[in-house]
Image (cartoon, rainbow over all chains, first blue to last red; front, side, top):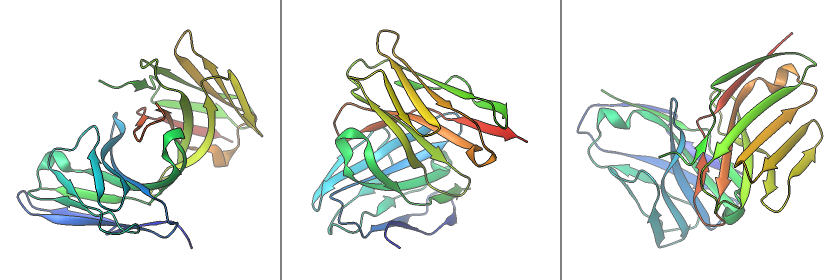
Length: 114
Length: 111
């Protein structure tokens, strides 16, 4: 089925470890983004990309890196995990990002940093 | 500081009755407002939207009202059904690449 695929679904990391959260979409959307969801905070934008080779920071970018080498993939890297990065991470792509419409979200990655 | 606020973390309503979810915002530059619905272990899905040039948009059982002077919008669900039990997020956009979300309201529809 067409959509946004996130892997892994669950991950436990130790403080200081690094990892990459994978996100892939097959809808040929130019726009992709990463959000984190925390209790009482809603979804907050981490990084976004408007096309291959183009990325920019969102509201909470510190501690995260991204790159966009293809239209399909938008991985999120944690270089040195911290307990404050324990969260649920959602990747989204959109055909009409300016309107907020057409956003397709993945099912999320639940990350715990101990 | 959050620009989109949902001050009611939860709402319980009887099946068949109306559910009213509220959302306030502080950024007068927002020109699109949306509601997303989220079930456990799934990503949010788009529910309904409204442009800032309108004050009402209706789609089946769902109606969104926008009061720009009060910087307030609401979502009405009539009648409420068990499948409506979910978390509802209010979101807003300035026609750029950043969608701002509220903290969410958990709706429980009682039989």
